[in-house]
Image 1 (cartoon, rainbow, N blue to C red):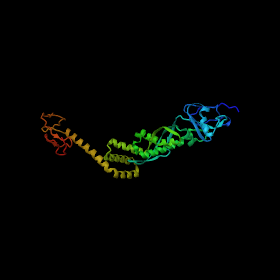
Image 2 (image 1 turned 45 degrees about the vertical axis):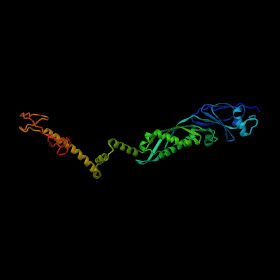
Image 3 (image 1 turned 90 degrees about the vertical axis):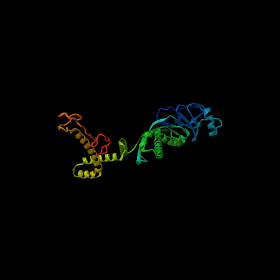
Amino acid sequence: MALFRLNIEWTDSSSNTLVYKYPFKNGGREVNDRSSLTVRESQMAVFVYKGQVCDVFGPGFYKLETNVYPILTKLAAWTYGFQSPITMDVYFINTKQFTQNRWGTQNPILMRDAEFGSIRVRGYGQFAFKVDDCSAFLKELFGTNSTFKTEDIVGHLKSLVVAALTDSLGESGVSALDLAGNTFEFQDKVKETVQSSFKEIGLQLTKLIIENMSVPEEVEKAFDERSKLGILGDKTDVMMRIAAAEAMKTAAANEGVGGAFMGAGVGVGAGVGMGQIMSDAFKSQNTANNNAVKGSSAHCSDCGEALPAGAKFCPGCGAKIERKRCCSECGAEISSQAKFCPECGNKL
């Protein structure tokens, strides 16, 4: 029987094929000593004999009589090499990186926050992977399938990433407020956690990107309120003033009988705070008005002529004006030697 010449190779024209099983002519799987193997860059070739991996070849050109013969002789107990064709399966595995695989949390992750209690967190991003151990990948995943594409495994890999994210959130102890500021450190932690799961199936996680970590809308509003209070000083009285002002705005917006009762109820709850606010405002305004009146109602003690501000002599009779010293806080008359107001204690 004449032996045929065969060059085993795979020209990959796809962007998502992980494994390609070489199709022998006429449905056979016979290889002889005149056969050769061509493995291109970003490829590995796996020879399987009776369900057992007998060799893995990296990029290059191989004459099978010299490269495969010792291994197959041991496995198949061949004494005379490839004098007769031998039946086997040849798989090509794509070892390039498969990028831009999207991941996201289908359900929110519950995390415990020291300031806000239990919070539901969602996240999404992308990851990249490649085949790292061809033998492990063949045994654990694609088996004897003729082709194996990224769509056949990405769903499983997404679940591994989300599981690692959930575990890392629980162990990190990072506050929800600090998640955005620690994205790079956090994604490195998740990548380290999930790497072992990828390795078990012969893969390597080459890149993991967390594009966003978000919390529910009501929690975002609480963050905004916290930021507002931080800018204003984060004091208790500031919080009471804001709450009272918001309550009064709500009461004023209500109309009709129901609105009147609601306004009355709000007034009972917010009246104390608003009363103090208005009292302080009126006190400051009255003090300023009293000082303005006292500064503009001075008259000459001799002729009664109204005196302009800063005048040293009366414009009516020419008498010298004796200026009285007054407290700038309460307007009380004080002596020229006094250092403190005798009425309000204001430092002069």
